Length: 217
Image (cartoon, rainbow, N blue to C red; front, side, top):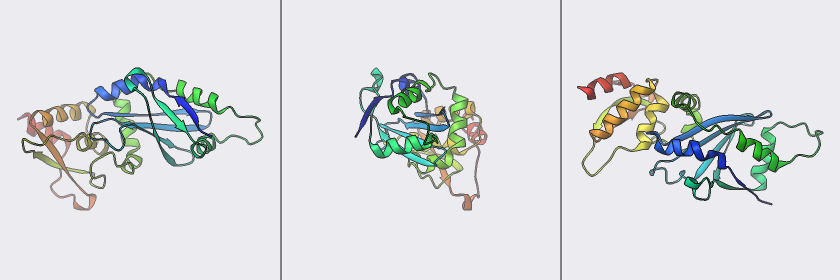
């Protein structure tokens, strides 16, 4: 049996995420004992994940991708929850089996109502960094194994910097949010991107501050 539900409370923060330079929606919410991390990645480059809502269930340590249907700009975030997903969502709540009947639709309403209507940018970046190991599994950042910042790279005229690469500045560096936002603006202005390397090759690395100073000069 499939349950259809509209997570329409996502509307405002979805619009915020679309307008942001990281094109990311992320927040954690709680219903009862259940802890639910919601994530969406909304760049045009996120072809495989653009209409997916990733739900990380913190108690049970599971990530569940859920396809989202409808016109999101009109508040339509329709999901179809099959029995397997229903079971893991209920398991996340850690209910006492003797607690009587459980109203799953009522739980979804509670979950929907718990969605914030605005997300402070600093709080969002804190969530991204706190959950970087989870995000690395989702293939929503370019070359997720390369997490050490190296240097800027000038792109040819027929290429543009990718959000999936620039997003990593928020996830994998400890740079100030304002500095990263300014750096991303400059990289796009000069048609540049950034190169990354793996932790075992940390020679000639850089920082957000250093790159920002270089591009401002």
